[in-house]
Length: 300
Length: 318
Image 1 (tube, rainbow over the protein chains, first blue to last red):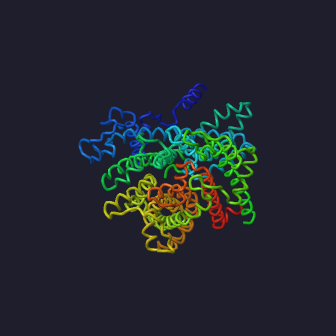
Image 2 (image 1 turned 180 degrees about the vertical axis):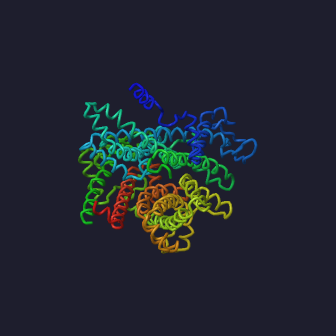
Image 3 (image 1 turned 90 degrees about the horizontal axis):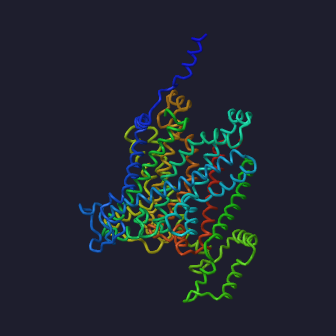
């Protein structure tokens, strides 16, 4: 009898799968999803550049130098200089701060508000669900950039306003995805069991619903990061995002870049590469993360 | 089918009502007073209070908010969006002048993207994990990552440097001079179409891959059909449903693409009109355009849903 019990105890305490360390998880991800790892590397490199930009940038991104206008890419100015003689490399480095800040802030805000509304909508059901769903329908009726434009037009050009303008169209998209998952979890037996045991609504949501909607939340968050960076670039390009002389990638491409196409094509080249690389990194990473987290796609 | 149709059509009404409400609310929370903006004030920035009151009355801003909303709905139904604060012309006329150009770019870009995306996506799926697949995937992921205004800028850089190209000053409609029209629009169409094609290619690839694993494809192979018959007649037909939906949802990106591409190529279309209106704080125009674009988007989605129901009998009986 005692042998039997100890055996059961041993079985119960034995780990079901080999426990991976944090590094082990990273190694597995790199091995299974090499493209995702490339994406993650690009993102981390950009984050690093954004953080250490003040020490890394060879010049002041705001300081015009009229003795060095339109200098081509050379040892002194790797990416050349713009029409005010500002160093393009330094501006691209500082631009990473704005792009990543707006990207992260807007997608975090949009996805978190959306996810909250999605959970509320699914959990409450009934009239609340119906109403929230209709509101989301209406918001989804606006193309993403048009809604962002409309919001930006009210708020005016400034970085914090761009965050708001970019995050508003993300809300209904995140709400949709999270609501669908929350709805399927709500009807699980363990949720009913929790209710049966007298768990409060808060406890059910916190203990059972939220942990289960975390994966779709993460997927939509990474998917929206690239979109948010693109939206920021587009708004700034159109003159509705960050205002001069802020070194925003989109703004660097507006006006002067096509105007000096013949004289200084590099002005229009490097900020665009930076935007594309950032979005490319986020979409590679996002795709792989989705594959890894979505059980339907696992093993493909 | 009829029940589905009725249900789907009835659902449009509250959505459009909501769209009108959102646009109304957005334009009412503008910081500052539209009337102040219109009158602009004299040189000292002072505005005659009497004139202000008269203007507020003329615009209906002295009415209760519910009446104002009712008036806005009624105006929308009659397609009366007021006058542009910038040009003084009726907004709807200004929109109609610019519509042919945007419509032409949109339709051509859609055609180009479908003609590119479906064969390429199919090819990538059939030749999965070969260099053909890798190249197609790389180009299509690139199309999603590269902002379309930058593609436009690169095209302009290329054209300016090698061909001494300058942006067209005036739009030539195709019925006036088809060749001039083609020359003006070919680059914008490619710029918008590339992004559009990129998304559709990826979708086609993944749905064809999914269908190729189905039993009936194995059967088709087993009964000795040639590859062309298996892929085109059996796989592609069944893989097209999600792609059709995507073409509808991507319409939103198409409009976003138009907004930036028309700005890059200085084309005087609806997209650039939105940007100009926002820049000039021309609120009646912003209001009208945002509403009309959302309206088109809702209608396109409706058409896509109906096409979907028509193509897939499983949806009709749901």
